[in-house]
Image (cartoon, rainbow, N blue to C red; front, top):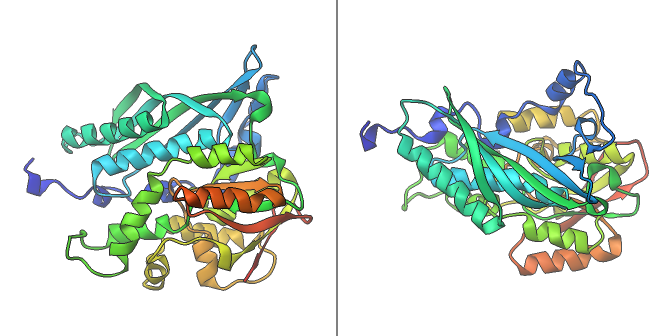
Length: 354
């Protein structure tokens, strides 16, 4: 296949990144038909919708295991590999654990040059090296759409694990990255390829989105543990609203978020106004109606429900520690912000204030 015949990777995908996930409602309906056996050493399983499974070891430590994979959301193969690896390992960080090794998951069309797959894998190797974990193997299949991701295994002290179930009324909610990656990658997929002389909001939004999606959540996780966080999750395919709903449901609490305080990637609001809405984000926004307390405008709801890929950590931590952790993370380039608080109320209920 000649260089000019190679299609854009995003043209081979029906979705983009985590926006191709099954919706939260769909996943819930599926799991309602499955009975998972328990085990005394399985400390975190499928019941709470956490980011990773946690299994107790005899030495007082725990294994933390997760898997994540998706279709292309950018056209550069190495960048896709970097984003996919950063996204997969994020689940381990969200649990307060340290990643140790990973296994690659690959689906690849036979008529797509294998050299491109090599670039995808090298991008993942680069992220793994930065994060300090090894890629120990993997599995590949012939696939209609390109797919890539990882199984990541980490460990932690049992008493240091963060889950969805630890949020308490009065705590602050901190978000460690700006949102909007789903809107940006949808705009990229539906637009002409970016060039050095391209103009418009996508030329500003795309590099900011890539920088965000390839930034590891390691520093944010370490800061969260040091600040006394008691609950955490990473914001990915269910959007900020969906992941906050899962956290507050598991914790038996409610939350309020201030829309004006939520960090947003540059150019995203212009792209949203132009109609670049991922299908996954629209589904998230529609489903949010059942747990939102009060009315919010459609634009705000879509933005807060935007399906993220390799998004930031959403943390519940003591209110008196919130400003310090945000200041420290901003000092290292994170778009961190205090976006709301945990409150008493119906479990899973979210109120969005101006």
